[in-house]
Image 1: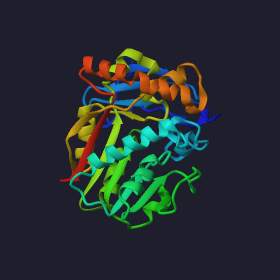
Image 2: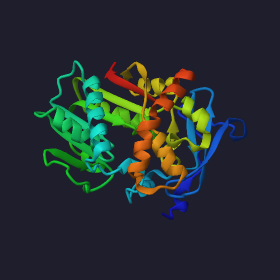
Image 3: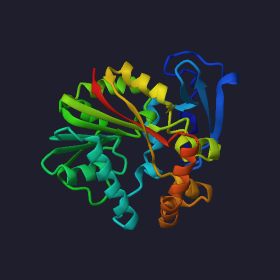
Image 4: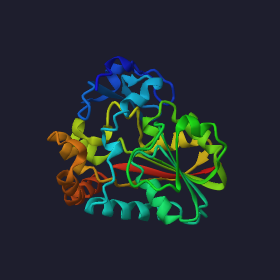
Length: 298
């Protein structure tokens, strides 16, 4: 992929404070998935947020995902690993929606569609929507009962939802507060938005440094701590409690390190086998690979 001219300098964080690059640089990482170059993460002491520099121009963001050749679009093949992931996604959705009557469900930034698919199987009588960049959804075995839309067409609708899933989405967005405010208007009374993001203070990030998969540069624009995630959610008009959550990443890091493309079976199996080590590292650092929040209107 050759899109090196689509990037611009970025020196502002969530609180719009212009940071001193020399003092605030945290880490520099190479894009190991699509070889777009080298990018840095800076950190703001005021809002406790990391931000990537340079970043992709907002109107060119889709180019980073156009070929669907990254881990965001890991095709579901219904093999042994997928079976485990599908079970896990249903368990997670049950926890997220506990106490919520789900008649309408939106997976915003659906990626490979796994959670939309799990929602369609779990909430059989609900209207299930999935939204992403593209005009059509190419992955196989995507049932007709799921309504797919690109985000531009979706914004023209007035559909409201009981549950909106933003799983690993807002870190990709140029204006996460604006996005959350838009989606806040799409919630039914007593509806919830679930947010999940990588944790900038992760113990595995401290161990693996610029090989940490969840920096995911240049696709991740913002990098959240508990403080900055809570602040972002609050500024968008929600109340929430931030929780720690684990996302298995050891297989992805193995695949990237050894240049194994398409996330084949071997790194996926290694991800399962090595996951206890990941959990142990996070335990030692009293941290987690990711952060989550169930958000309700204030």
